[in-house]
Image 1 (cartoon, helix red, strand yellow):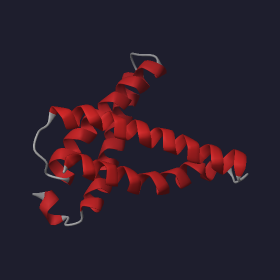
Image 2 (cartoon, rainbow, N blue to C red):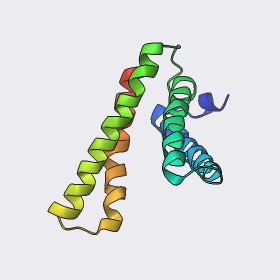
Image 3 (cartoon, rainbow, N blue to C red):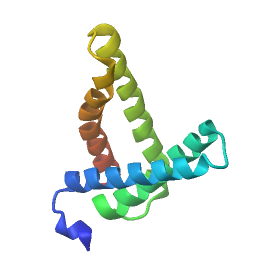
Image 4 (cartoon, rainbow, N blue to C red):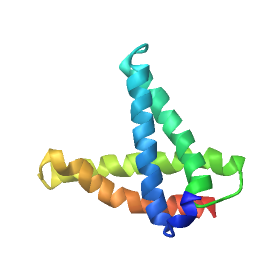
Length: 123
């Protein structure tokens, strides 16, 4: 199994995030062919949370099934979004740094925190 070949849970988390991002983006593009962008985005986003649960449960942490954990995972991603939005705001409006770099700063800070929250949730 691939998960066993990658010993670091954090690396598995990064791989699963890449797979999730690619999958939900492709879903978004497919949905754009039949739905407005805002509906496509909403469906892809919710699908991404569901996919994150499956990938985190099986591939990253190898956790048993839990409806409670499945219900709590969207809160982890809501917190990631809110913290990311705050970082982007601080980067651009407070620190007056380039807006093009703001999402990268957000990712660098939120990914380890999201990993920690997910690991806590799945253990």
